[in-house]
Image (cartoon, rainbow, N blue to C red; front, side, top):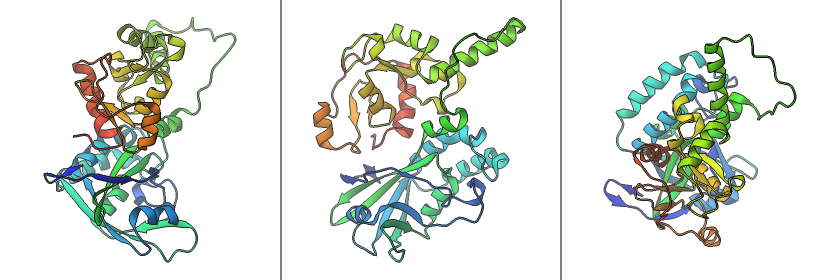
Length: 333
């Protein structure tokens, strides 16, 4: 992690991502009723104190303007075509523009303090803050489809806590489309459709299939990527067609673009899809510190390993820029 020209080593990563709940966000973003509350449920008090410090802690956190811009770009589709019934759903496109302008005027690093809500009884750990950086999260985050990743960085004796907002693309997809349903048996008669209607229907079907790495998208991707670059497995039954820029954040054209994809074995597809690995443009793999060193050892994957067979070109590099900014769980310098 590098801020203001200073490299801050990672001390620890909080063990779980914190989903932004409906009760925390501002009124325009809410799904329910009421004014909401500023306190944020983190995890159990025991785990919260292990990470942030002793009871009654008050710690210094920071966010990066570049991360906030990346989040707003990643969540843009949800602002403009909401999957949920937000309180001011019709106003969200305008709010996105306003909030982007506001973020563009911020400093490169936004500092804020959070403090322990120790007075709340029970085992659940909560934090709160009156600082503008914390209020900013409440203003721009959309509930249930956003989450926060936190790293402890710097010196153990005087740590800082790096917060980064992410979009839960899978949650958006499920809210937009519901569970995948397969239709068996006789198909409906399509003879009444015009050529234009039939083309539109086929395009929509191709887009939907691409979400699951199926159809034309999968076929074209296999023409470019014949096997998993990690395992060298080439049996198509054992491989997954994975998107680089997540499906929910992509345009219709990007959703079916084979250059927006890789072919991976299931384990590596999961690691890439969840942002636990990413790649440099010269084919080196970068590992997230959200996964423990022990687990990486069991996977037998080392940071900065050169993946010789990984397809790389200008189009994929452009998609990887999005992956670095909005999907990867860690610092990418």
